[in-house]
Image (cartoon, rainbow, N blue to C red; front, side, top):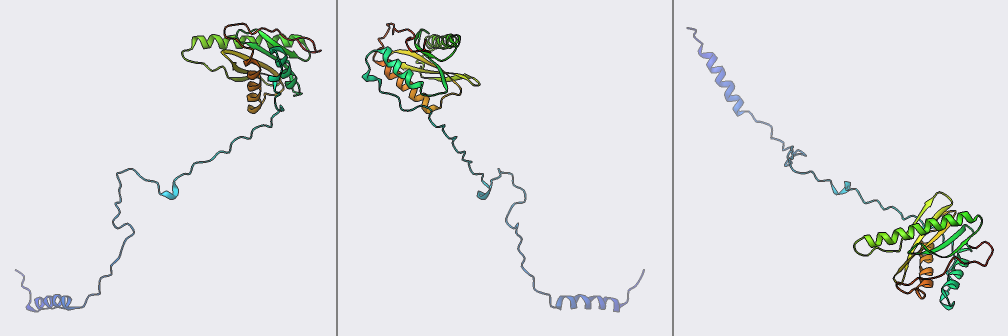
Length: 220
């Protein structure tokens, strides 16, 4: 058995006592930027307000300048055919328009005007009449009310532009052959002018009457 000297125990006790009595430096309070913040979040993340994307405002496309002047007042003109002839003269002020025809909802022509080949006018009549007749059949087959006011164009210059309108209880289509389609404001002006011209002459369920007008050179 190994025996330790008394001096070794006295030295150890002295060191322990000295360490306990020696002054210690004051503790410095340190704060962490993550104090109080959970390091792992199980909820949905929220985007700081400064990073919320703002809605992008897309500027509206500029409307093209109207190609047509103000429509003439046709109510002072007596008779449907003279009224439509007045509107034909109005449309002819646009140099880009080469052919115009108006048909009823049966696809029958009321009046027409063309410049150049008559076969092109016949093609315009056939296309416009087919669309008008198809729209009537679609309206009869569709539950509820189907608006006759529509606009559409086909082609890539020149184009065939069709403007549908209502007058009384009847539907009509104005077919226009033009280098480029008319803008929305011109379309609305054409629709309003022809609806006004036809409204006084339309009798529900009765033929509107009229055939493609003749008289001026270049008209059919």
